Amino acid sequence: MGNSHISGTYKFSFVPGFFEDYAEIAKTSLDGKLSTQPALGILSRDYDGIGSNLGYNKEDPQWARFEKYIQYLNQRHIDDGISYKLMYVIRHGRGIHNVKMDELKQSEEAGQLEIVNGIPLNWKNYWSHKDGDDKVIWADAQLVDEGIAEAQALSKLWLDEAQKDALPLPGTIYTSPLARCLDTTKLIYTPVLTMHGRRLEPIVKENLRERITDHTCDRRSSRSWIKQNYPDYIIEEGFSELDTSWKANTSESLEQHINRTQILLDDIFAHDTSPIISLTTHSYTITALLAVLGYPKFMVNEGTIVALFVKAEKAAGTSA
Image (cartoon, rainbow, N blue to C red; front, top):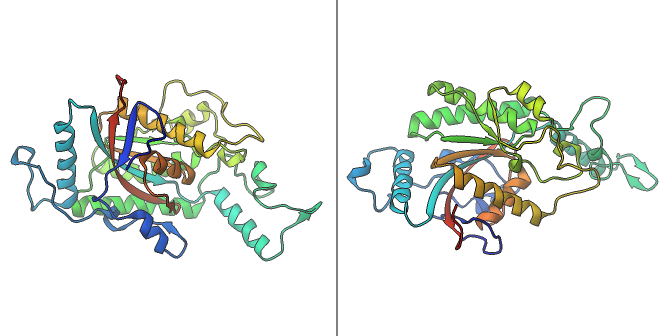
């Protein structure tokens, strides 16, 4: 179920049979996109191979049993280059740029969009290349009130699910460096971790950022700005002060984005032993992630959590 055309330290694949078929759910939704599923879509099932040595009890909540099963698989394959992780993949809440795009789309459909020299001043042709208009700034777009509410709702859902069915916390939390993800991560996880006596110390990963386009909403702020506004966040080694990846009139291809996402996962699986991790990221980055995992493509609504069960196998000739 992995993508055999992508080379890297690991071959990644999603493990079917543990969560709902997200692609099929997205197909049948009114907007063609996936929203957060009840209980994050985990399927009610037993797990083979778990013995009493791992504390397995059929009366335990579903999530608690699944967490034990992941531990069992990782112990079983500790010497053969195979590892498993449960990944909570989060798309950021609604941002200023999302609102502007929707407004312009509605104006264009209504025939009310300004046209200059025969070219409609829509998002793609004009406004995406500006830092903002006379009302708002969308360069490194911030969350709007709706996006804040979406993130807060996910936090409440997490607290409810953890109390009701023992939803396990991620050992490591990763976030894109773009402001909308930094804030989404804070809003979701601060209440959750506080309840468990943990500090929020997510790791900022450059390769979790959105596909690098010439849109200013995809241009990140400086390292100093991130450190000043999110002092408890851990910025990965080698993170440049300025955004040297973003360039006007240049965009990353889908293939380049997929390869960058492979590098991201290679890095995480090589250095992070946490069996459960969280990634706060973007729509197109989720598309690239699905491609690396060989998962059928589906789109995700803003402010959505998707749970993915991932298998990693060390590629032949690697020593990571």
